Amino acid sequence: MPTLLDVNNIQCRYDGQIAVEAMQLRVRESSLACLLGPSGCGKSTVLRAIAGLEPVHSGEIRLRHKLLSRPGFTLTPEKREVGMVFQDYALFPHLDVAANIRFGLRGERKSEQQRIEAELLELVGLSHLAQRYPHELSGGQQQRVALARALAAQPQLILMDEPFSNLDVELRERLALEVRDILKARGITGILVTHDQSEAFAVSDMIAVMHEGQVQQWDTAFNLYHDPVNRFVADFIGQGVFLRGELVQPDTVQTELGLIKGDRAYHLPLKAELDVLVRPDDILPDPEGPLRAKITNKAFKGAETIYTLELSTGSRLLTTFPSHHDYQLGEQVGVRADIQHLIAFPVDTQ
Figure 1: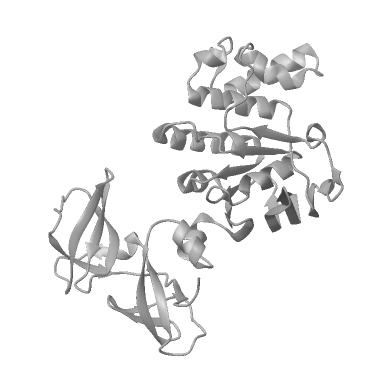
Figure 2: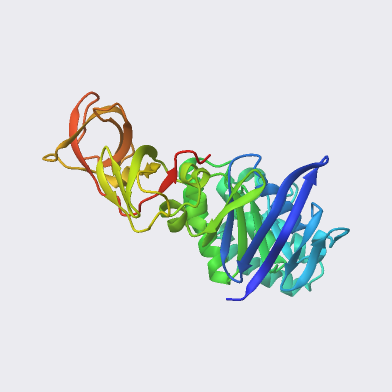
């Protein structure tokens, strides 16, 4: 797919302070991307710059090669062919659902407005609620109205700023999948801003993990989890702990779990100290195994339980076991390491 959006080396500032630095982002047509990171990392600033709500101090933003922003020039939001879905939905309380959706179609013939309105109501599953007002809708229904209204103007790009954060966890996950299906069905390119990994993983084809105004890694969810480029990404994505180890071969580290042979080589001196990332899915139950660990904490998740384990050395690990066996705190269990992707960083790396 060709590139639709090109964010080329932009810098954004607030009150003279750099909020976003050297931001590079290329989003392919009909794909769904995500800006993921903790509060204050600059992700919403990038989204606002793409929308035309913030200027850029260096670099440029282009949509299908059309210049949107550069230093000293910001194309107005209404001329960008970009739709926006806000965290608070921003629906008009005095308009019913149908009128909210039609709001962006005032220049169209009435018959065309009605056609688009009916099509979008069907798309978001709200045809039966066309005459309801926003206060009569659930949070999830309001969010779907906001999405339909953004789609009504037929933008080339949809921007979504923390669109599910006001919803409960179960509804948030379900609606994230619904939104993905809606956008994919229409071939719409979208960018989601969120601090929630589960949302990012559910919606996005590609994810930019941001920290302190910069992209740390632009990759698929699988690669972010199994091949993080630095400690920040390794810590931020998923769960896990670091165990100290010693490099005995370019692709092998000696740890208290035994030898861990990975799928990559480290160009470091032998005997170099490394911190090895161990994910919960790297530790498997093995009742007959020689490695024993004490259960110090547990969190029931339904189909599985996350246990905190303490080794005889005092080191702690996380693991997930099927929940049909309920281990007790203080109980000793047998485990083994099955680490398919060796992720390690030199001890002095910060």
